[in-house]
Length: 345
Image (cartoon, rainbow, N blue to C red):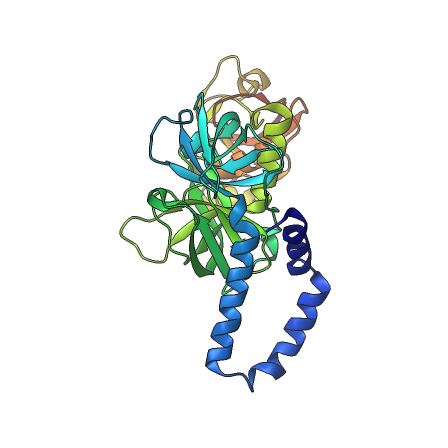
């Protein structure tokens, strides 16, 4: 398939107007449609997506060309000049990478950057004019919607599986303990080697990057949403890393007494107890102490450590942030200036 016809197909399957027209009229059409015709329409939809997106799906392995190592994961080309999105646990930390195209051609690749907190990584293959796929809007997904996973399980390239979105807004722990939010749960079968491959909707748009399966379970796969992937790619391209605010404290969720909740009219029933402090970190410099219980950061309640992570992930570095906390029975507040740091918070 030429670049022109591929781009035209992507444009057609992404046309909002034609999709709305088809959806509005399908109720009248289905009544007189046979099961065989419905199955044929389903097959045509999957085939069209695979033909459009499949050429952009690659195998990703550590090492250089000719190393003979079995492919360790999958990836999706997101720009024609060789940028490939995959999982951090597939490519993160590698000095050299090997990218295998659908045609079997192997290319050397280098890591642009990785983000263990979202299990995403961006690498660049030494090539140009490659077929690529669009990152779609994962916020438009609906439970029950058809999704297609394409990858390289066990090194078998361009393997396709289909399923439906079974849940949205799941939380999944990354290897560094952070909560990956808005994760897509789906039923498209995944196997080792699918990691880093795309989850695609019926309009040929990448809505997620497959990241995990539950061992011994059937029909339970997880994908990092495309919305998160777009933000991570932007950070990696601009800075070579994902920058997040750092306060320099270790925290733990702690229940609040009903009396405290009522007295201070709190919207949550727990806070984040400060269990340890970096003596030179922003929190310590602002005056927080071990034993303090953080109630809010930037005017947003902090019922758990995940809430602190969530707020700091988007807070502008170097800008003061207001922290409200309890010290004994006193409600106090300070301003801290988050800095960039490798620690979780």
